[in-house]
Image 1 (cartoon, rainbow, N blue to C red):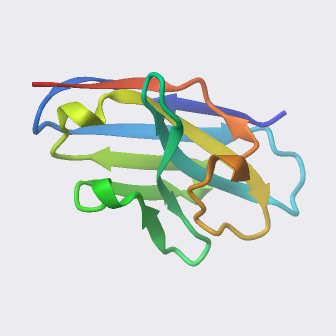
Image 2: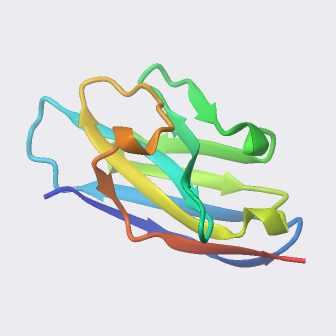
Image 3: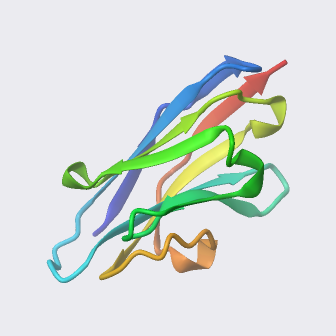
Length: 127
């Protein structure tokens, strides 16, 4: 069973930085590898895709975070990172990492493209 675990959330003053980590495990089929992506969920809202990386190495971002967040990954560790700089109060949300098993990663930011989800980590930007 594939498992996804996030870490690194917390509370930070506006303008501060946090780095989230996401590690996937449990895949037993060598034909496929993990495609990971970051999402966030505001209370009462929909889950919003933030960042992902395609197999080509191209990153994909939600427009409102493009200039502040950086996504990276370590394929040898099945881990994706999200470096968040210049955090704002509006970035306060629960952040989730999601995974799908595929032969190629498209960098999709649609929640319905991913089958496995972590439990989420809270990020709070305080004014």
